[in-house]
Length: 440
Image (cartoon, rainbow, N blue to C red; front, side, top):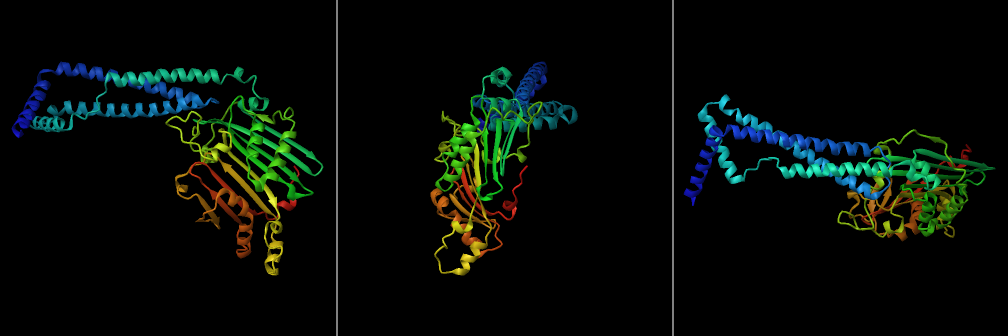
């Protein structure tokens, strides 16, 4: 058996030497063909790049187009990797052809023999480009061109004519702002949209209700979501508020009443940008609260994750919803009937507390895996066994207990991570800002 393998290696070596000496013309022809394949691959690569670059500046609202763009991004990367390997291999082939000139013939024969042995046992692991590789990437380039046409037709201004008035202006790149001052009460609504590469058009809605005479009645709402032409952004906010936990039910109902009464026909626009701007995700929260913008799709294809209990409670487009309000420390404590007068006095001296509750239905962070519930005190996390309902019911009383033991503690926070999605409850000392709410 060893003799047969040795004979095969020797024969292969002789064949390769003979091929070089007597088939130089055929090699040149193959080199020309390879060069042509690389040129076709380069053209396909640029077609993919063009489609991705142009679509990055367009307000894509169809999830199917976002999914196709994600596939094209992967094809662009694979094409670039193949192109790099082929160009590198071509350079190595040229160097190998120059070996007889740079070295003695005997050394070159030894080099060929060594490469023959390696090729015999390794199966010729060269990254030679084939017609099928080229055709596959050219097919992706054709798909990219069709994708770009679909995006351009989908982003046409005519498509938004019959959209909700608020959404239509947001898709046009306008920032909406509405302020109304009635006596001591200020209502302020601010909605801003942005086109984010690979994520479509995302918007942030912020609503503030400020009562200067009764600051404890003040509250605020933040909603971040992905836009589509058919969306009713205020209606979506109301649907989310209906899913809030029991401790925030009264505040959620107050926010809903205010949103329903907003005169949408008067919320035209405060100023308009000439075009969409691609913002740095480092200064925008959406990437943090929803790393994968295409997760939890209803079709549940192989690339989609399974929706969790939390993500099923809110519309799929929602990225984050948060409510903040003020609560009395004494009313939240369980020290009303206690004999500990010192504890009662300490609670009575606490300023009004700012309570914040937020839900991110599609939050995912590998660092939170295996930690379903955590308690954050002074920046330090501790694992706890509380459920979402228990957190909702106990976060205020637990916060006050820690404030009594640690007077310098600024905030108390609890987080819940069911695997996909997340929720947090935070009780923060309000300081003096509640005493002087600006009327502006």
